[in-house]
View 1 (cartoon, each protein chain N blue to C red):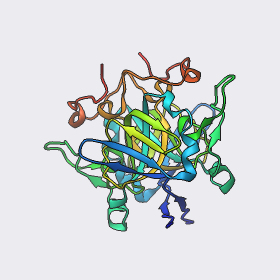
View 2: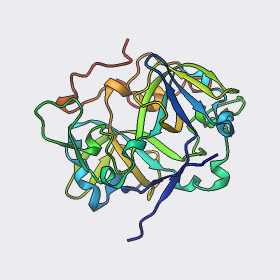
View 3: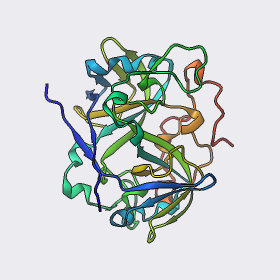
View 4: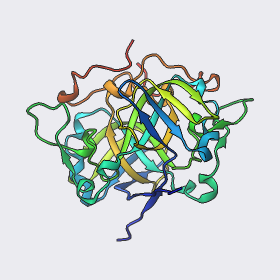
Length: 148
Length: 148
């Protein structure tokens, strides 16, 4: 078995306080932000660096964060930070984009200060929004962050 | 400047024909699929292996796929396969999950046969569904894949 390995380099990092959240994009990647200000929401992919170690990356079962009285789920059936490839995925609201300064101000993000950012993608209803969704019972009562 | 590097290993690959699409998960990761069958949709992160080369990874401007008469966008403002970290993101419908065989049958995926798969996450309306979205004009008329 040949084990392929791919490499990632962060494009910037999360900078946050208790009440503010932004992404600081490194100078060499700032041109990639051109026209991001045309979008209201984005998908942020980030590196769950605190879980980037062999032990955590080999865990395949986790307790769903808000699961009560349920047996463990596979990591591909929940949003546990323990994953073979610890890539975090957050849908966020865009407050402002400053391409020259590399600053993307967000309404929130569930990643800590200093978290490496891997990618920013505009949120597109055409591919990313699903009307009719079924989830496991232990996720059914979660409140939606971005509902009318 | 210290350039951090993170490593990824695929958990499986896309297997598809013209009319079928599935993910084949490698044996050592199959336990991670437990309870995925409780969900109707998932987010698939995959490696855009055909664009994993220094030239493509340094491109920061791209023509939005369906943009007509628009100037180039930053890669963080469109879904171009040219990205510093070429991670593909697809929201898919789950048709069936066979944990023992490591088979996840999908309704579709916009990735080629043989594409390395990095992660599978259940689609959660609580965090992933946004009602009120604004997009750049050149994306405004795209038809939604999963609308009522």
